[in-house]
Amino acid sequence: MVRAFVVGGTAALVALGLLLGLWASPPDAYQGDYVRIMYVHVPAALASYAAAAVACGAGALYLQRRQPLFDAWARAGAELAALFSGLTLLTGMIWGKPVWGVWWAWDARLVTTAVLFLLYVGCLLVRGLADDPERGRRLSAVVAVVAFLDVPLVHYSVVWFRTLHQGPSISLQGVKVAPEFLVPLVVNALAYLALLGLLLAERARLARLEWER
Image 1 (cartoon, rainbow, N blue to C red):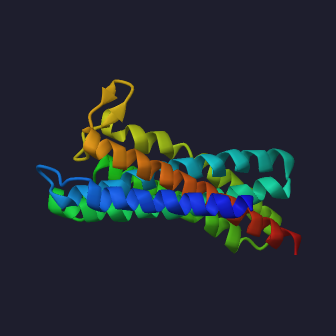
Image 2 (tube, one colour):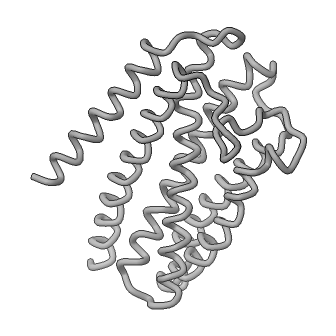
């Protein structure tokens, strides 16, 4: 019953986010309808940060305690960090083509995001390619912990470096997003984080079942 409620609530939130982003939100004065990519791009980036944090925390706990529960969550976090950082890259490239005129630029935000994606793909590869499963789990946990160090670089790259990417629109200094764009953005961010939580729990459950076989 609880699981059905959570799944239904998450699906409703995702549907509401899509409705607000695709139909209720107006086009941007400069970017037109391309601005709607923001409602996937930004939430996917936030979800990748959260998934990376889970992989890092669970990986560190596994290295300390060697308990299957922590490995299951570290694996789930790494898989979803790779998924959502990949989605962030893809939507960023799709958005960048009409706005910047190129699919890819050696921009600090793009490069650090690509590194994040590759690090978590590597995290999964070392697990799968290791001859000894336990050694693979340990190496994967180490990579998950180290990979998280890239998250601050991704997030603050637009502040620390000169980039094509726009600066932060929401920060401690204030909000630079008009309400008609902010509301759909917040709803979609919450929807993606709820979806991430659901996927993490389900993937961790499956990983524990695989461990017990």
